[in-house]
Image (cartoon, rainbow, N blue to C red; front, side, top):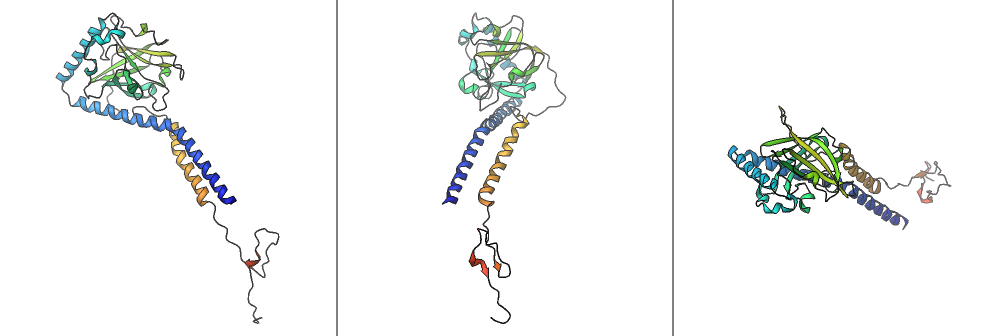
Length: 305
């Protein structure tokens, strides 16, 4: 009865441990899965771009630039943007809502940019803040790209606060790579939009997320000013949309090992003891609780008695 109770307790302890490991590993595994999905989205986008010709690029960019020109003419673009038709289809060459992707080397981010900032978009990727310029560059433009931080399912802009003035990031739209250098970092209330307004003659992109971490009462704005893009002589293929810290791999590797060790300890580590046989010339320790009188075996004497 005691053995059965001990076994049940051990199984319950194992279940609790596995549940705890699952809770601990969920953010890591979920973020990895999300990064793989977004990486595939970027790869699909690039494949579509390679199938297009120069005339296609010129027409799409012309459409986006016209949208930005009309947006700049609005007195209140963040509330009146719906006066300009066609937003959802501009730059959407894959019919998935992706208009391009943003790369931030300093924090290992490479994520697709979707139209709008709906809940569905911000739960998995980066959204273009409607009412701001489309991120195709040009005079009198200020694009705003927004993402969450601190989500258990995706890293996204969690490390955006690590950027400093002078860092650079790029926005890839079709066959163009636009480079921006951080020149201003601000913290504002959610309803303060002045920092996002178009600056006459300027070409800016602002990365936006919630702050402080976990509280989300304010908005962190990391503004970048357009600079010349320097193209590398070799192309590095990005393997993950969000690069994972190598230290996060440790729990993933350790968890199965711990589980295997526990299973071995429960089911394989306790071998049954075989009773020791004694001869009449090898008297056992009678004070030993394991002693059993039936274990004594007598040898036949040579005289037959």
